[in-house]
Structure formats: structure tokens, C-alpha cells
Length: 150
Image (cartoon, rainbow, N blue to C red; front, side, top):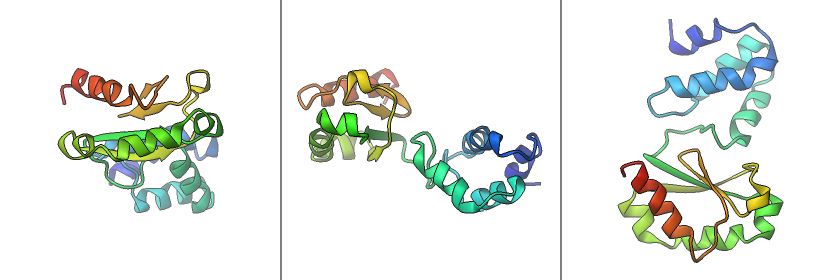
């Protein structure tokens, strides 16, 4: 029996368990992502449209639909963060070749991280980093990476 099937059997066939199921499937995968086959299996098990499962998995930043790199940095692109300068942060980070190449950081965007009071925000390996500016973003990211032993 596949890991996904074993995980599904732990849960009632009720869509209220969708996020919990997706979390467990992601954590069981060595590359911490949810495969296309797993999305299909979840949809079939819960008897919901695959598009609904895909929508949830692609919306939340804690889920990935492809194998992740060792470090993943997601810049929040919610309206609050965007207004507070998230686009400038994204540009500053993506132009830093040292960060991308030497620190092996995959850089992307995500929806709201719930840190609106401290916008703009990001999540590095699912750890929130708030109160970012173009002046402090590199220092904060490198600090988190070093604390993780990278």
C-alpha cells in the first residue's frame, strides 16, 4: 500500500480533513511536496473535485506541488504586503546572486502569511520573517539560514 493510501485511511471521508491530509502527505514525502497522483487520490477519497484539492494545495504557502530545494523563501504578495513594498523586496532578493546560488534558496511568492501588522513579510523554510525592508532583508535571511546551519 502506498504512503498516500495509508494516510488517507486514517481520516474520515470528509472534506473538512483536506488540509490535515495534505499536511501529512507533504510531511511523508522526502522532498516535502504533494504529487499529482496524491492530489488525485485525495480528491477521489474525499469525493471532491480535483480542482478543489489543487486550489487548496496551490493557495497555501506551506504546500508545494513540486519537489523543493533545500531552502525556500516566499515573499508575501497580499495587498497589505504589496502596498508596504513586497515587490521591491522581491526584486532586491532575486537580484542577489549570492543568496540564490551560494545559499541555494528558491525564491517565490505566496499568499497572505498573516503578518499584516508587520508587513512586508516572508517565510523562509516556513519560518516567518516580518518587518522586512530592502535595507535589512539580506541580513535577516542570512541570519535565519545561519541559525538553521546552512
